Length: 85
Image (cartoon, rainbow, N blue to C red; front, top):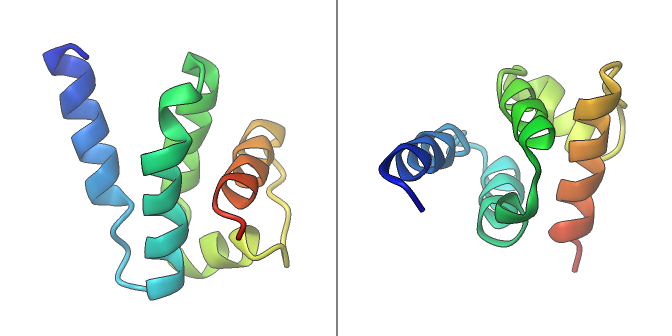
């Protein structure tokens, strides 16, 4: 991992700390188990997802809402799949 990619990963990990237990567990679990396997476009979609307000983000991640952006919706499915029990 280059210094740039380590810095980006650290910044994203920080953005995954939302202060809501459910979001923290889902997002941090995905960072630990799924983020490394994403392609460049998927990583860009993950960044867009992290820009969502917490309330919308939670609704998406628990399946009550589907993002209109199909690439972000793909990442939501990946997060739900990666962090499923």
